[in-house]
Image 1 (tube, chains in turn orange, cyan):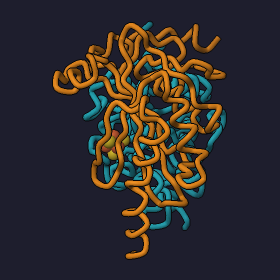
Image 2: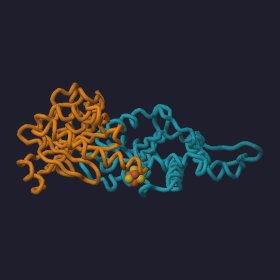
Image 3: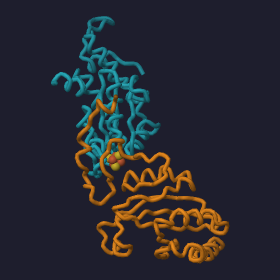
Image 4: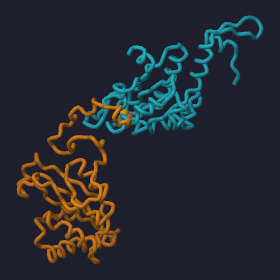
Length: 182
Length: 175
Ligand code: SF4
């Protein structure tokens, strides 16, 4: 247990140190939240940063835990921080080697809802990105198969966007069984 | 366990003349058979399904009521147990499975979610499967106890014994 802690304490500054050194221009802000480094990165460089985090032999964040997004449209305080970017795409990484986590966030503006796909780095990103697309409408450029994954294929809209009504737009009452069974 | 003549008489309204001859109607005999060997098709999509599994396992033992032959093919079953949340993506599947079951078929809607959406009043959840398939018996609870499910099966049995048609058939006759 103690040993594990030591490793964490050592490697937490290391990742920031290395990011500062190699990708300083990509970093918008950095923070620490309960032992996890949070790095906010520019959209243009996110692929390079993630690739660096994965392939650098000292960091080796080889495990992509999750890809998701946050709609900050009702959170003025969050919006202000990053030039009124409505969405924040979030990548959670884990390093088995250093036994520590890092969270990479990318601000995305509403008028350009696209982020490069990381399926080339982690094949497991495929479904995670599909889910983020389905729920938030983020387009992952270069994704091999960007279809809806949770909602039905003919679903309209992206339900985790804050302006989507909680009770939906009547999709739970209206069914065309004939079409679906065809 | 042998059935005594009194059992048969009281259950089926049959009449016994002297000796071993029993008179009854074909319907009553058939219903008696149906009622005591309901083959459930489990449609377990969420936590309620865990209680359904408990009901089928040894402690609560649904086989005491003749319903232990769980079929995962709708073609071989006559009791659909909807236990859990049904999302808008799952509803066509459920409808299709219901349609594939041979008549006469009975439906139990188990738990708050299947019956009315439960606490999940959201865009994705069907607010009661009875909007799309006919339900014979509803079980309240979140989740209902296994005893509640057993009670529901017994209620279906009572319906069958009384000669009532399943909701699905009534529905067809109305339209
Ligand atoms: S009624 Fe309760 S236990 Fe049953 S599926 Fe819904 S949430 Fe789960």
